[in-house]
Image 1 (cartoon, one colour):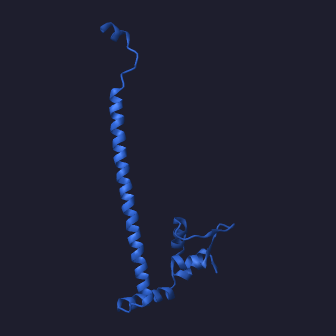
Image 2: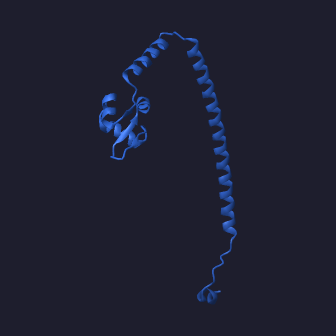
Amino acid sequence: MKFSLRTAAQHTGTSKSTILRAIKSGRLSAARLDDGGYEIDGAELERVYPTQQAQRSTERAMDHSATGDDTPRTADATAALAAEISGLREILRRADATADELRNDRDRWRSMAESQQRLIADQRPRSWWQRVRG
């Protein structure tokens, strides 16, 4: 289902300016019409602004997890998330090691450049006054 700016605001219970700000910030995607209006896909609107029914089902799922009813599905999801977290930690550790290595290389190259700069003789032509003075 497609929504205009006004009908999207009515459907979500927000104002038109809120929907427009979400579109302009890129949080909500919408197609621009020839007349200057917007056409918002219903699925996209639901993704950014879930309806009351979706919020109630989420709250119900939260209540079940708070009471300790760990279904196998929840346990599997928890295990998958734990594995993903450990993988992300490993990626972060590798990125930190690479950054440290690059910092060390940068500092080494900088010190080499500074020492070479000190070795370069002044190649500017001497003025007549410097030649007279010696």
